[in-house]
Image (cartoon, rainbow, N blue to C red; front, side, top):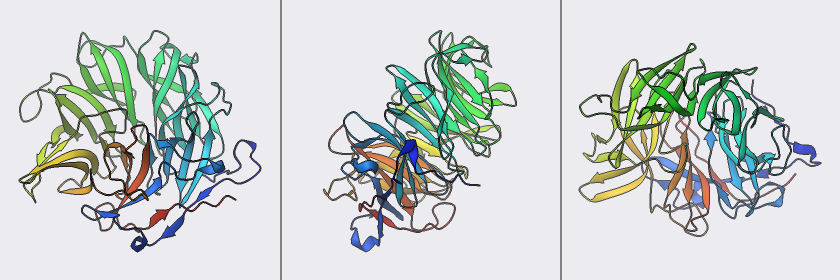
Length: 425
């Protein structure tokens, strides 16, 4: 059952929604880009936002298979909100200044949206403090606050962050502990359980220094990144109450060489785990699948002969890639061939590569801007890629969606564009 949204949030007397007019693509030139994807705007700097506000910048996101997108955004120079895009409308589901058990909402971060419409997120609740919350369709519920008990790890310190939510409403998140470093925890909709904390023995030897960036499946498996003493990083899997190593920095890598700095794990419903290894100044994308690990990127495109590489992670997740439940991957990368190189967003279906959008392609924007930076991205199981792209002003970014015009993804998806007509009520 999908969540039924209560649109009268925080005692507002009116239903607040931002309704877009759906237009044919013939009215919006320059949107059909790359190889069979159509780019549409969701929320751009200057677009109208609920409550008569105006979007200034979008900074992270999550998309589900219904095409809903959860995203925090700056709507004035000091005010943020957490928003849900759903069937052409944008709703504010948590607002700056609203009270919570953890404190007063400030900056919203790291949404995780499941197919039921539930949203896990973290939010600033006091200067230097963050909590983790679950929105059930009506109310944000505090799951972990600063100074709450952290089972088998003491108490949470200044922040709980980076929640990841599965279809059953279970959650994994990272929490800074009173001792200073981060641990990873599991929430089963009733209680919080420790997965890994600083000082715990690490599989393969040594101890965890900190554990971060969890990713969860519907079975409650959790992949996460950790730093290990005496040195090194690793990707680990929590499954059935036990933790095991998937890869550790310095381990032999299939095909030769060794794994470098390991980061950004993502696990899908079938248990595949994708992660990044930083070797020297370059990133490699690896996939763990059924006890085997293989390198996905860099790779040679069998159709064009071009080399395809993934860019280094920057800022926070989800970047520079996203793995869906079909084993398909969207990523920010570089295509290099006889005519030089181009950077942009790409799609990999397990066999072939497709271009989604390149840097310097025209934006669907009334100012005739071009895409320059791709800051976050997420991919659902019908091949829709939501992403955040920078604007010429370095402090502004907009939210877009790339929809396949053919069967790039798990099925045909209608290609309808958005225009910015606002109706309140």
